[in-house]
Image (cartoon, rainbow, N blue to C red; front, side, top):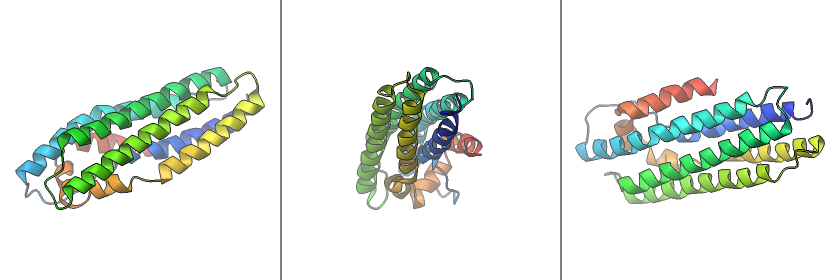
Amino acid sequence: MEGTNPVNKKLAAALSGGAVLVLALTGCGGDDGNEKLDAWAKEVCDSVQPQAAKIRSANAAIQKETSDNSTPAEVQKADSKAFQDMSDAYKAIGAAVNEAGAPDVEDGEKKQTDAVKELNGISASYASLKKQVDGLDTADQAEFADGLKDIASELDKLSKSGNDALSALEEGEVGEAMSRQASCQTATESAGATRS
């Protein structure tokens, strides 16, 4: 099983980068709260927390299948489910941000629209990775390993690319309001733990 193991490790490393996308919910700052903004942040944070947990467990499932003794079929099954879970989670976060409406800040509507578009894009990317992994031939180990390499590099791109709109949404007052929400603090703390 030597052929796919290094690739699996690469896949797991790339994936953990991607899982951090949604958990950029940090920010520490004043507690001179804006009630409207705090209510918005609470709604978003409460919706994000279960999705962040789903992303962490999908990430853990892929890490688990990186062991030497996993067969290509086992790796394929775990990756496929993980990518589907991640796709669903990002879509749900996009829906939560959409549903919460625009935050009560300057350019709030644009920030919200951009973030929703980006989250839906990330969701679509994971759905596409699921299709790719489902299409790999597990009978041919070398071909399977090559296919995984392609998926790992796509994942790597995904983890490096765009959470610009999310970052823009979470900067300044919005980030401060989110950092005051217990559910966002929980999401961030556990994200730090998965990054190591």
